[in-house]
Image (cartoon, rainbow over all chains, first blue to last red; front, side, top):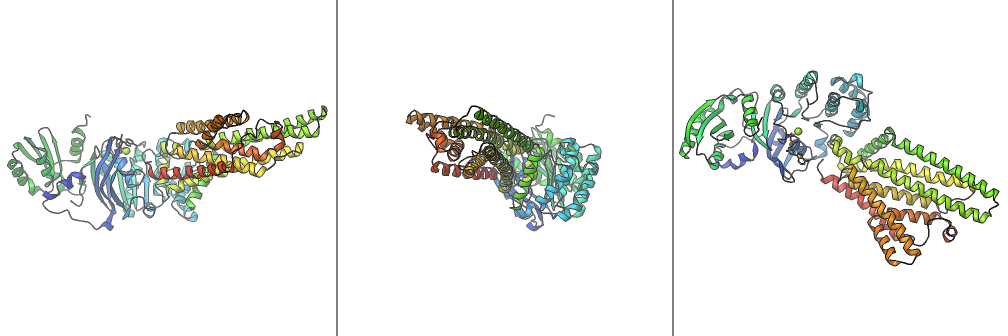
Length: 330
Length: 277
Ligand SMILES: Nc1ncnc2c1ncn2[C@@H]1O[C@H](COP(=O)(O)OP(=O)(O)O)[C@@H](O)[C@H]1O
Ligand SMILES: [Mg+2]
């Protein structure tokens, strides 16, 4: 845990950091983003994404609609030009053709030339990946089989349902056996069988050794598939969670405080991977359980009135609702 | 570059699959048949009325030019209609996202599409322009003066409009793109007639306005140069055709049009490379 730094606030709190973040050699990273930011006219879509994704992990990018998930992925894929910041994908700069050859992408709401048949679509995408025709002859039917579209191989896309389009979109994202697979809301438009298919595909991609980056607004979707999950809201990563670590959930602190200033709040980032203050209620996810007394002392020493200070186990769902709830009037 | 050829192939197949190509071909063939039939009856009527060979040739030459004019208009409409949606439509629908994330440069996507349309339009123009000339020659013995130059200029007009719709397609929606491109062409068209009328009535200011319109959009200039190359000077002089030789676009203007075509092509690439998809 703690390999990852999240959101721009971490950098601002860097001087207070008790110990430096362990660094992972860049070659082991599938994605390494540094302060990626995108502003559309006056709307900040992504505030400053700093993120490392290791090779071989299934990484969830979880947040409500409009949080900036698609924009983030599009920046990593060179579809959207960042306003500032930079990133490396598969060890190469954004947009590098060699890296792109090793990437698969399922866009949100997959749409394509509706006059192509399923087979023609896959063959075209295979050719754009420079896969030799002999290899494609075998791979295209296999891919159609995988996504359950074999009976519709000769049907034009114009006759496809939303779910079928999503399935053929999945197939084209897998046709090059990618090292890094981006899935943007892959289960949208899919029935339960289709959702199961997506889950199985993610599982087999992980077994194959691929890195998967999964965008979703559904907790249930990332909960079962992901190794780590980043919560994103209003263009900002709020927290990154290791799904396999048991200790993680026990580091929560819920406190009732008054008189806390912005500066003191910022200082808390030295101890916690996330800090959320909603009027009097302060919720934190500490970097370790042993930090609790130090946090309390820090608060008191900085003139904060503490009425309640309780270690809690924050479940993923608690956290998600908390993040959603802070100013998301659901 | 192989990717550009793949895109060109898809674009060409799209035209074939979407039936644009076939509709245009059917319309073109129907036009050629009608035109031949008309010419045939015209010849019969000349025969019946004992029209002299000299007058006959001039009259046929005038009719042939109107035929070329109709073809030129068809080509303009075809070019714009076929290509107006290709970039803006795919950007709006998101279809381009699946292409642009492949190991393909954006310029290859654009150049490939351009080549695909260019190939289709070239076939169409060749069929129509060479077709009508051959038919006229066969039926009446009269043909265009420099048919290949005429073909080249009409072809260039089509490629120029293609580059312009590609350029606007990287900036605007399909509808805006169509309105802008046809609007500019309409301006050039009016400017062209104004220039001719101005030259005939010795109104230099009108000629100037026409030239400015041609600089803004040189598409119509290419057509007027094509007429000049195809029509016999005698037909022009005797006013047997509505296309006067009063103010013919200079080779400089043709060079400018070529530059314009290339410039818009590269501006389209530059814009596509830069924009969000
Ligand atoms: N092309 C665009 N122009 C203007 N605003 C945009 C554009 N794309 C996205 N946005 C805005 O940026 C924010 C983030 O959008 P998006 O990345 O699609 O979120 P998500 O994928 O998490 O639902 C939203 O508020 C959205 O309205
Ligand atoms: Mg989205």
